[in-house]
Length: 304
Image (cartoon, rainbow, N blue to C red; front, side, top):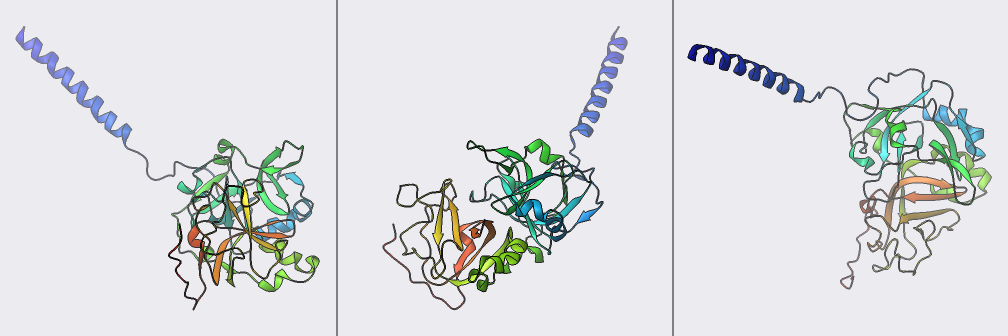
């Protein structure tokens, strides 16, 4: 009887050991593929962003929308995301020929789409269009006023249409801002339109300028009624340039909304989007504004 009991215990232990081995094997994560995106995508018929803009120039130029029916793709590096809340539900990507905005109904995009991350995007069955002339990828949206335009696609739809390529490289040449040509802020709108169309959506830097209302106390985007907010955003003017030409646009929900604007000469880096004929600079973080080379800022000890 004892012998049978020992034999049964041996069998049970063997079975348990086998199950534990299988469980250990099952629990080990597969680190060879990303948990984000569609890993089955392969590069086929990749267009440059400049080619994409040219192909859909009429649709973008007319603020229209068009469903992509061809199996085409774009590839680029993330240059802007929602890391400090000023860019909402979208990322910008750059490939060296131009930039484009991708609209996604999801928060925390910076977690898996950090600056410097290269991605492949399959455009088939997505929509290309524009809002105020700014080219965007997404799906149709109808506002309360009845206006329809390309806006945020669902997280599930997006997950099927992109693939992460390699690891993020924040030092990539494609993440270095292009220098904005200030001569494009004067003259006829028609004359500067080619520059605007080619560069809108890009990470750029505007050098040696001053924020008009900066006094060391006024903040970027107060929600106390002291500044008119449009769609919960404050448009801050740049000294010497008409607000119809260029503004720094900050959401009242941005992490730095209540940070005092820096005084004196500064270099302003950000995603340079457009709304019709106006450049709107979207700061990715408060660190996107830095003192201009050679300028020593005055410290205001009376700041709140």
